Every structure is written in C-alpha cells, then in structure tokens.
Length: 230
Image 1 (cartoon, rainbow, N blue to C red):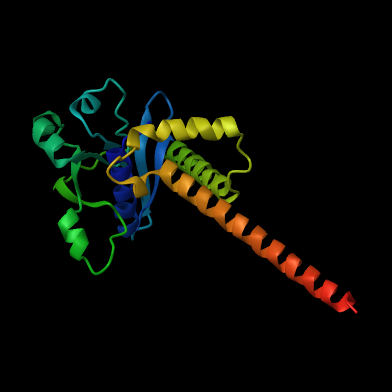
Image 2: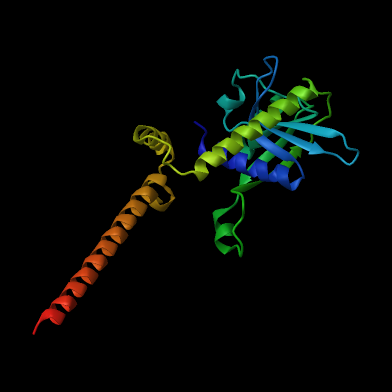
C-alpha cells in the first residue's frame, strides 16, 4: 500500500515529466532481474534519439535503505525525495545519480491562490544526474514501457465502467485498505464518508421522487372521481 506522500510525489513527478515533453509511466518491471523502476520516462530528443530516465521515489530512511533493487538502468537516473530525507541521506547518494526534491504547496499560499494547482506540490533539482549508457537493451525498455502503459489504460477503462463489475466483498476489501488515510479532522476528504453522504443523498432523492409520483397519482385519482360524480 502506497502512502499518501508517495502518491502525492508520483502525481507531481508525472506532471513534471509531461511538462518536460516526456511520457511517463509508473512501476515498470525490468528484464534480467534489474528490478522495478518506480517511474520510467521516454522522450524523443531533437536529434531523434530516445532518452530514458528512471526515477526511484523514497519517503523515509528505512525506505531509502531498503534491500529492494534500485533500477537505475536509464540514460539519466534520479532519486525523488522529500527535503528532510534528502538532508539526511545526501552523503549516501552516488555522484552519478540526480536528485529531485519534493515540496508540498503551503496551505496558506493555497488559501490565497487565484487558481488551484494541478499537483499537490512541486519538484526542484537538487543535483543533476550524469549520463550513462543504458543498462538493459532499449528494445526491452520499449516493450516494457508499452506494456505498463497498456496496464494503466486497462485500469482507466475499468474505472470508466463503474463499480458494477466488482463484487460486494471486493469493494469492502478496497474500503478497508483505505482506512489508513482516514482523516478525522476532515471528513469531506474521506472516501467512505463521501460514499455514505452520496448514498444518503441518493436515497433521499429517490424517496422524494417516489413521494412526488404518489402525490401525482393521488391527484389524478381524485380528479377522475370528481368527473364521475353526478
């Protein structure tokens, strides 16, 4: 289960890549036991060469020191870190690896903003990466990039079809997974509370429609009875 901070960093990084003219996708499995790239971006350069960039997102020290393989197989490779974590681990980062620092937007600034931001935060370059040769065949990168994009399209299509395809048990399991993000101070931000509010609102609307229909039927019956009276 990804943390709220990880999801915020993913969303910000995705927008960052798109703004740079690159296409990005998350969780791309590499060949030859080269691990899983958190985010992989693909960009065609002016000389028509393809540039591949790999991003590893870390949110805690234990996450940074995890034994999971770092898939720095691209031409340019980065850690994406919150500022505090970068300050703690910067001496441990190899010189060839770039660093992007994630900062969430300040709540006070958001309150006075004339336009709502499209991402939860922003990224700055703390250290540029050094170029390296691809560590896996480019054809393998291309194949896996396309496969990961197809996976995301499949997810989007499933969401577009609504919840009818899922069993009640599956929906219950998904709701339980989200309990760790429950915010008692902001009920409107919680999926479960939104679901209950929407359900109650739908029920009230349905009952009101039924009452209106019954009243209309009652009115029509009364009018017909009046017509039959001598």
